[in-house]
Amino acid sequence: MKYEAINNQLFTDNRRKFAAQLKPNSMAVFVSNDIMPTNADGSMGFRQNSDLFYLCGIDQEETMLVIFPDVKDGKHKEVLFVRETSELIAIWEGAKLNKEEATKVSGIEQVYWFHEFDKICKAFFAQAENIYLNSNEHTRRYIEVETAQDRFNKSLMAKYPLHHYERSAPIMHRIRAIKGTIEIDLIQKACDITEKGFRRLLSFIKPGVWEHEIEAELIHEFIRNRSQGWAYGPIIASGASACVLHYVENNRQCKDGDVILLDVAAEYANYASDLTRSIPVNGKYSQRQKDVYNAVLRVHRSATKLLLPGQTFEKYNKAVGDLMTEELLKLGLLKTEDVKKQNPNWPAYKKYFMHGTSHFLGLDVHDVGFFTEPMQAGMVFTVEPGIYIPEEGLGIRIENNILITTTGQMDLMKNIPIETEEIESLMRA
Image (cartoon, rainbow, N blue to C red; front, side, top):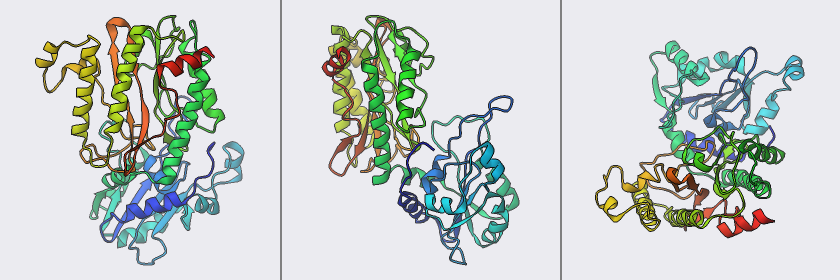
């Protein structure tokens, strides 16, 4: 991995938090992701299962974690299984973690080889009354492939059909939503790398540059700063393409007079950042572009102040919608009559701001958490209002990453240029 070693206290604390939520005499099993194939003998780059990484920090395939707080022998409360390395693997792929290294990374003393799982755990399954199995229960998931965890779950339930099975996901969603100091530092590192990439662009962008050239500048800066690369597929959308929310082609030439919507960010140590800025191709916003930009910026700043412990998403989204409605009226995009006649289930402002304002951020860019529960200190959210005007070929979105504290908020992207004047000044330099 490109990132520096993480203090394993993070993973020890995370396992403790998870174990505290288990029913008595319960055993939980987590399985690493597969290396996904492409074609012929090709494969995609490996990306670890976020829940497994959160609990042990092992960032390689063929890894399993068992947590059994009430195990009878007392010493196998935490058990890690890793892929057995060899000289052949070392030559062709690079050596995998040995047992001592796996302990150093994870803080887990009991480490075995992956192929020893059935032999070691057979007695544990006989002891356990409940077995917690993991699955991807993100509300926006759409997955057609069967994961390694899915295959394991099916196999285990067939082998032990009389056990009582529980879901790990609700526990993981709750504890992962609250970030500790080490996690916040890792997210901040991802944000800082993103800042370096963004600043690099401000002197690079000019009329005639291609969107894919901008993409290349960013990935260069990210990787040279120890990031694996993108936290998500980059959106580099100039002109009318900025009104396509998930535009990913990045294949057009940027024209004089257009604004580029950049939704681009780095990951670090599997933790995501998520930035959006909208900047003028020629280094100077037109008055209309500046008016729309500043309207979005006012909503962004007001929305950020609403992220407080105890805040509900229902009230938050309603308040942001009201703020956006006011701005759209001032811009002449909505009329008072439009607001009076609006459908409460799809308010008038949704014509120009159709997506949500905030989502959880962490190991996944759309991280896990419960939108039905009040916000808490330690949660990290995006704030990303936007105004999209297809008839003007103009889309503006502004997005920062915000940590909720006991007293308010901390903007993890506070050093990234956001004011139109600062952006214009840096583009002229």
